Length: 100
View 1 (tube, rainbow, N blue to C red):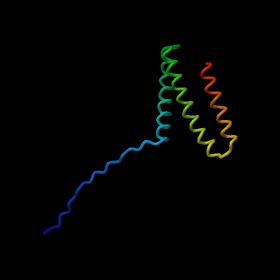
View 2: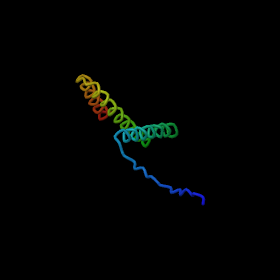
View 3: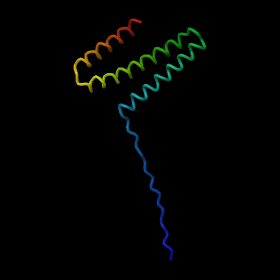
C-alpha cells in the first residue's frame, strides 16, 4: 500500500501592526502626493486658490515629518544643545507659517 502524504494547507494570517515609523512614512507619502498635485494644479491653472491650499497642506505635512525625524536625531545625540536648537527651529517654523 502506497503511503499518501496528506497535504493540509495551513493558512497563516499575519496581523499588521501599526508602528510609529509606519505612520511617519505614510504621512510623508501623503505630503509628497499633495506636493505633486499642487504643482500640477499650479501649472494647469496658473494661480489658483485650490492649488495654493493643497500646497499649504503638503508643506505642513512635510514640516511635521521633518520635525519628527529631527527630534529623534536630536534626542539620540544626547546633548541638550541639539534639543534646544530643534525647539528654536520648530518655533520659528510655526511662527512663520502663521505669519505667512
